[in-house]
Image 1: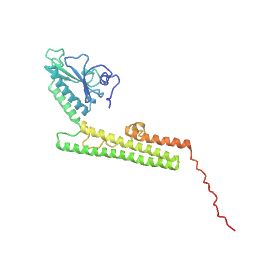
Image 2 (image 1 turned 45 degrees about the horizontal axis):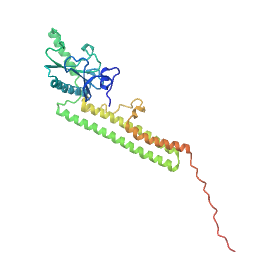
Image 3 (image 1 turned 90 degrees about the horizontal axis):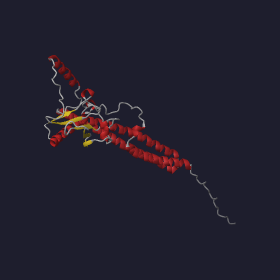
Length: 313
């Protein structure tokens, strides 16, 4: 699947290969490359392939992957450059010196006399005790309110509940897949029977009935596949991002009928088009042939007069 892009984003262009850059590595959804003007020897940027504007828009799963890649690249920079130190810098917003609206992490090898200016203010600002206590209280409340809703992986009970939750959603995914297969089987059976009766009886309405059966089962199959897709997203939210309410099925079932449920976008699935479309095309060809040819002419039944044996005098 191609990563999401933002128009006129310099980093999206580099990720897509539409702009030149000294790329160090690609993989796991992260691209590593040298900036045009590195601040130090070995200075690189790590950029998520999917366009994410800042840290607040980053999902838990993408954050774990990005952090893992930062650790890997930091170790590689240490081995390759032998620096005396290293900065990992990630900025968000113009006030924090973010100049490209695509989240990125600087891995910056450092030496005692390199060209990088001091990052921290000098002299350090002074804060009163009341101000420090106010900072702590505000941050403590905000962090407590933002506690992730997912499972606590340090708790044995939560780990067991998470496993049961995944098993439950796996069952739902399996049922949707089985329902999709059943819809395909019944569509072939009923549409094939309609086409067969139409050919035997030379009646085109049965062909139209077969095409209607295919369209109806294609719509039903698309609904099953949509539900399966939703279930897989919830599964990923539990297994990867861990961002769901524990043991909650919210988000698994669709909440009422989605707007424009009949819209063609709901049918853009290879298992719908490659299965139902050829059968519908065959039915359409048979229907056109039947309408052009018209009803078959049946020869009139000709009965020869029964010969009676001659009566001899």
